[in-house]
Amino acid sequence: MGKDLESTFLNALEEHQHKLLRICTVYAKDDDDTKDLFQEVLVNIWKSMPSFKGTSNIGTWMYKITLNICLRLKTKEIKKQKKLLRMDSHAINIYKTDTSEDGQLEQLLQLRNCIKKLNEADRAVIALYLEELPYKEISSITGLTENNIAVKIKRIKTKLSNCLNQTS
Image 1 (cartoon, rainbow, N blue to C red):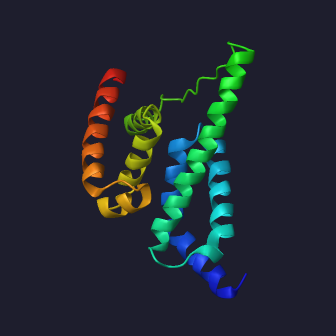
Image 2 (spheres, rainbow, N blue to C red):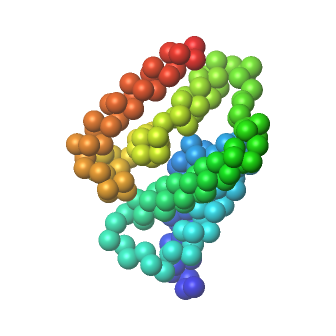
């Protein structure tokens, strides 16, 4: 791989790594799972670098790959869980977080738990929205229209608000 691609990758990674990591967090069960998912995302972005044509912003392109990897691995996880459930109905692991720390951490964990309850499409939209991407860019990544994004975000906010009110 050429030096140009390597420097493009490293520069883009430096600029977007925190946002990509936060998207992975939305789809991961815990910190270790987040790290594994993030590593998988980076490997796939690196492998895909030669195919980046520059027709879109590299950040948008990286978000799209990140969401695709997260969704693909989530689908594999769901299939795996279904097999486990069929084999042993007691094999359900419920992810619990320690919420005994300060109120802000507790609220953040509650928000993350509520986001994890959303369907895949809504989770993808809200993850990008929370990264403060403009509707146009979210539209480009998800394939939905900007108007559809605006409506979805309003509905998702209502769902999240209801979820947070139930947990508090």
